[in-house]
Length: 452
Image (tube, rainbow, N blue to C red; front, side, top):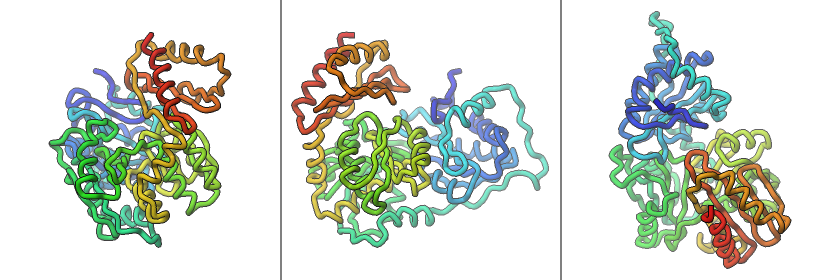
């Protein structure tokens, strides 16, 4: 059987790789790995998620661990409550944007630290798939206790703190939850905010009648885009199933590349926390650096991936970090990626400057046009990267290898990196104010890759 353990979480097919016996044993393994007194447990809206969460909870209780249940929630809620309650760990049953027949577990450690293969998942994998027999606590007084389901009031209060005291405009906002878990949180925020929410595919639905919510896929954007135009909304929002990512549409219904959101959110964060540090990923960088430095902040590069961002956020005491893939991290929100604080930051920015969303974005696109991420199927990613590097080496670029290969020239730059999970090479190109140059370089590098 192929292991369901990945680099940063557990993902596998139902029921072959992930099932209730697996979840029960995983709960026992978490208890056995290091002594734990309390664990927060939540789950998303998928059909199998409640049963998997209940099995995992039983494994913890049978091992003498107290459980703080969240029920159906988003991954960021597990991070928040693990930190807020001082729990020893948090577990979220979710497969995020994987196909319907998948499920998995995301884990957070004490103090809202990310679990990785080095600090938790590797040893857990060995325990789960070993022949070790875990004892069941038979003395009832020593068994774990199951607390009442945690409420959302403290979490919602923290979200609202992001816009506390601000003069927010009464915007009309399309919310496309994709039948994931974001909808109920929007409902709780609604009564406290001056916005008119247009709700599309709003209720969590385990059947996922409209497919997996994943707005990174162009074919998943049409419903939100049409709703923005139909209702004359000021902007549109969309989320994946466990809403650790947030996606945006301008008032014309156009999908906004996540790259430009990083700069806009950084600008808002630096207004409230002057001189702060902002982290960005290596794929597209120039716009973020320009915005952050213009706002008086310090921009620092970080390797792509949530564990790297969460760690570096701590090391640098950075106020915010953003990836172009729509992962946004906030120091004052348990260092985790959140799908709620980004849009609150953007509506604060819209309310502050009075501009339309498209105007804010178009100015940045004109200054630093980009290709967006282009994926290629290749047989040997390392060899293709070397060929690209050799091709451009005679132009004496600035080279970075923090994540894949980045080469910067006077008026354009690119990053090419191998996918961690698929046989894909991912290409991103940007330029200084010249969209035609971006198109030309896409054509040039595509020819190099496809000649493989």
